[in-house]
Image (tube, rainbow, N blue to C red; front, side, top):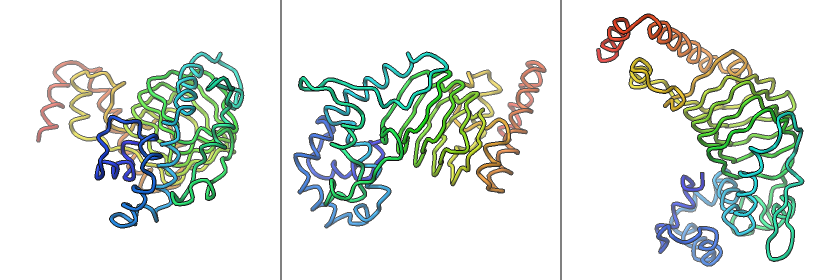
Length: 286
């Protein structure tokens, strides 16, 4: 998310109050912002991942980006289950002219340096929706192919039986989302993906490099025992084995297996009755 990016946070060290469109503010004060970062926070300019994430996210606050983002959030849930799409045909009208995602990508590239934003751009590996934020959407039965989802944020959503083929997920954020019955084919690339507070009940056939998951805490166990809706879980729940197998991380595998065992025990206790729940609940305070 843009609000978490340290370059964006640096705006507030200047005269930014958070009310102005951040893209407009940056373009209006670009030289001053870069000069400030050079003097006070040069390490941010030298961190290519931070800069790439910033440019990927900020461009969706440009006028064409906001129109495209709105249309993607509106159209995606309406696409009929079973449809294969790379999203490349989606267009919006701006200033009496039609703009495709490809047009938007050319005008607002993702770069690894701010000082030569348009000359140090990084070509997308598929339809370029890098940096897009999607909230509260339900996608069902789609076959998504040849899409670059790097730096995309999917938040508080439901992904049901999606198939990903030749898609790139690099530093993608999937937060508070349920992924059920999805399949990531061997041709996908996944690196440094965050699965915060998400249900992962899907099949992974591609390698997963350095994934991030959130931990199961005692307060999460208490909430389960008290009957809280698991849809709003505060931890990452992994079902099945393909996730940790493709991550190829023995420590992560051990942790997930232990957590799966705890959750299975909680389910058994909840099915047993109020007395058993009460005993288990007391134990969480010990």
